[in-house]
Length: 383
Length: 62
Image 1 (cartoon, chains in turn orange, red):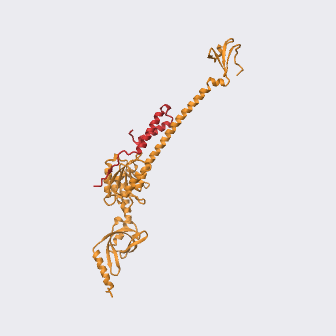
Image 2 (cartoon, chains in turn brown, blue):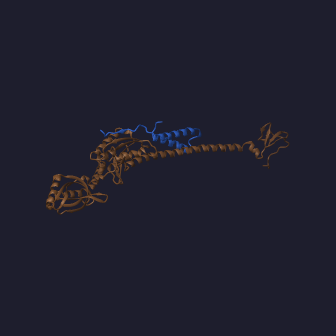
Image 3 (cartoon, chains in turn orange, brown):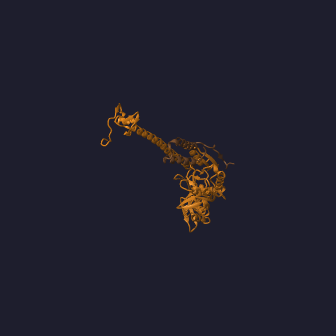
């Protein structure tokens, strides 16, 4: 019979193993929370951390706030204005604990409030307020819309020289350039890339640096496109930065943003012309040029249409003149039965020179009649 | 020809106005048609021709 252990002996070994690996260590994790049970009177909070693939929970671990860290829960609710409850994703510092009766769990020591969802919204509101207050000449809010100097810069008729601010080897960079290069109208573009990190704490400063570089050679470009691929809401933090937003609001070249999110709008988006995704920024540039070309084609058709009319009218005038000339020509008159009287080859309009005895020639359509006048009287009744 | 799209467009608009308001006579029509054609060709070419080679400023790559 194999050697047997008491339950406590086995559990002690597990405890030792956990102690060896985890004693004195803390870890930052980001996870969704569920089954949140707050006991405000005791200042405890029990919950479960979970991770899902689709709707299936693949990982689950108990978690707990004890009274010494319970204030984190209260602070979270204060900052976000929402209850600390199931369904939230939080970033927190935890310690692995093992209890011989209650098993393993994660004790939460601290919540990183900068990642709290509502906190971001709150910070954003404060930043927007400050932007409005400190830059009244650049930024104005009317009817829920932000009007900035940058947004009001008139776009050139055609946009061809693009300064692209994006992360190297990113989806955004690839999508944008692909859309531009494959435009169906064959428009030519020059894309000058200003590559920089666009995620992480320092990136708003790096983006400002790239924009400064562009500004120092602004006559080379028609517009600036700032693009990046999609990401979580916290990845957009650099685009809610006060300094970057202010710089964009007053930037001398039109700025198009495609920061890769359909649901959320960053502050930089509000300060510039927002087109949601890198592909949409590119297609809006292409459309802008197409609109110009359409207007051009319209003018072309109007001009050449009118030119044809002008020529057509001139031809018609000539035809009309020809008809008039023909209508008044002697042959047309003779055709109609009239006669022409001549004396010595001169057409006689006034009969003064005609007297009895005068020799006249009468011209008809087909014959000439030579005669001598026998009588002359005033035309009173005939015709 | 060296002008902006705006200038070319404006000139073409003026020609269109003139011809639509019957301000162009037959004897100057050929000249005006040539002008219009040149303006259109200028824009169409410029839209599809790269002025300078594509430049890259990998300024953050050090």
